[in-house]
Image (tube, rainbow, N blue to C red; front, side, top):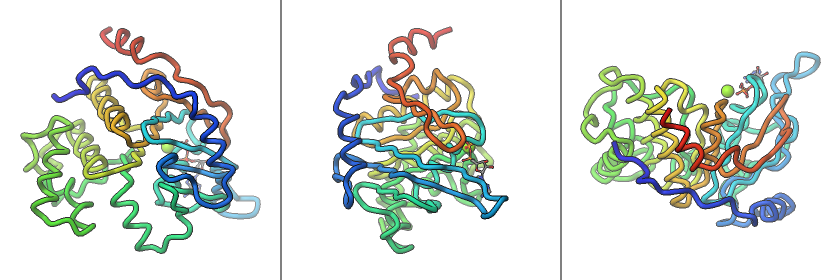
Length: 272
Ligand SMILES: Nc1ncnc2c1ncn2[C@@H]1O[C@H](COP(=O)(O)OP(=O)(O)O)[C@@H](O)[C@H]1O
Ligand SMILES: [Mg+2]
């Protein structure tokens, strides 16, 4: 399988904190090129009245190019909600979400769909592969929907499948692939093309630990190449791949820390 070739992530950038603060202060545009994802005091309430569920209660988070942020927290703390808002799959009840300087609330449906297809890669907890399409077709689909010619889209899809170690299996249908292989197809689909924001919701859940680690390596590599990443995980050894860890509890961030451990420590511990 193709892996990261041992590339180490850069040390956390001490400028991150001040830039994030600046981005959150800005009344209008986020500084494009500086902040790929900018959540500004985001709230998401389901329902109303006494039955209302406050999934998020004022979360701010800025993620810059080359930065992978892990989000941890107990079940029900709002992790998936945060990702669906960041990915433009749902809208906040208050607050703003900006992606590459664009406030998502200012986009119409088509504009939002285009931004999602071009710029945002989303690795869901459930895979959402289309059963009647081959692996290559599944991966090429977002590009084709966006107007890329079929031949180019398929070539890029094969490149992305090679990146996840599935170069030989592109013509198989999802039900002819193992769970781990399906997950890697879904990841190839999230990485294909020029995705600037990669969102992953417990992407290693269905995988054995070796495949899970390979997935994190791919995510890390894409982020090192200039994307911004948000990884929801409940495993500390996965969060250790991130530059920063944000903890959620009851819809608010309770803590934000430097990485739990260096990747060197992670790698030396992973051979057990
Ligand atoms: N569509 C929905 N309708 C009502 N409540 C929801 C909905 N989606 C999420 N919630 C609630 O919001 C809270 C946060 O959910 P979620 O973001 O899925 O948490 P996590 O991913 O951390 O487990 C939970 O209490 C959940 O039950
Ligand atoms: Mg969840």
